[in-house]
Image (tube, rainbow, N blue to C red):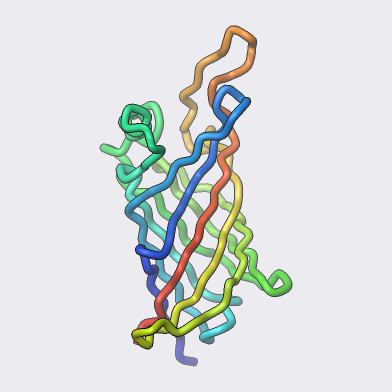
Length: 177
């Protein structure tokens, strides 16, 4: 059976993360340099598709240059040793009109399984004749599971950074000829 290949349209896609700060607010960040590919058996059904993703962790952007410089050090992503974060799917299954995307994510040299919720936005043809497919993904991981353990204890007894990281993505793919 022929497969359909899709590549990420980076100008219409974003990958964000959210982490609690001081346990009272949430800080949002994103990765500016991301790539992804899909290989599906149909143009409008992504069950059993294969998905892969990569982000240059040095492209992290939280809207604060000093924080971004800290995030690429050994305290967090250690970009000199681990310049990319990757994901490889192990399964994509239907969940109503949407999907569950299971796979292995590698951050800072540590690989762990993760399951992401994927909302399928549909397909459309742009004004230049390109077929596009849109997805919204969400999930959670524990940063400590990946060696991202930097933190500080507050005088109130809490910690500066939460361990749970929310992952949010708006991804648009282009069907390849």
